[in-house]
Image (cartoon, rainbow, N blue to C red; front, top):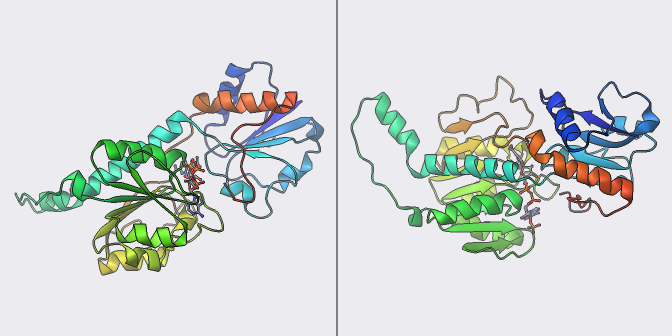
Length: 310
Ligand code: NDP
Ligand code: OXD
């Protein structure tokens, strides 16, 4: 039996090598060179793979996302009925996201955009500087990535709040949950970070109502999915000055079209969905563990809850 690998990223060969490093006996097929469809028992796929295509494999028993996010697998038509989906949880994926969040929190906290503008004008001017204890940070989604980012930020003395679906208790993090908790936290967030999974419940969460609830001059950092942001609402909030700056890694659609105003917006700091990139050698052990679990009939790890969408 064989494992199907499918990604349009340049890392396809790295994935194959990483999985074989953990289990050299695996038979790995690189899409579209699949061979006999009946031999495919697991598919390790990324965003471009067509979920209808996976219905071709009569013996498919497991689908693994090549990332932490699974919205690309769950949106209609979704995975073949009855086939479990696993996500990745990985120390390097988590730490890279925390680095990206920290980079952007510090960019805004330390007034880097203003200092760059002063430099352009050759103006020697010291700006008044709030301490970390005066810059409140709200994190939407306090799971694997959000809680790691919260840990680093609390260490630096930022007051950190986290919004989750269910109540949560994390050291040094004030928890909010549910619809009322969202607005309550937004009103207190000088910097709002989005690290939510994209689900029907979270789509469009960064909308005019939420952005207007932030204190005037707040900053927004979105490292989750483009579908969380209502683009027109974000542009309006930036243009009115209500939101003073945004660091955006994710967009809908991706790649961001050339004509998008986000490319050249003076208050936007943009990265091309590069906040945290899966490193195949780091995640291969958990993928192989799940393949072995599937073959042995043992419980699978990092399974996605279809009804929650993450
Ligand atoms: P987790 O599943 O570990 O955490 C999700 C968090 O979001 C949990 O705290 C969960 O609440 C909360 N949440 C989910 N739905 C709701 C809701 N309706 N209302 C309030 N809170 C909600 O996910 P990860 O931290 O691992 O990843 C988050 C996302 O980051 C991924 O889904 C992916 O889209 C994105 N990502 C982006 C990358 C990039 O490079 N830009 C890289 C990797 C991931 P609860 O704790 O109650 O379950
Ligand atoms: C992920 C991503 O979900 O890279 O892991 O976006």
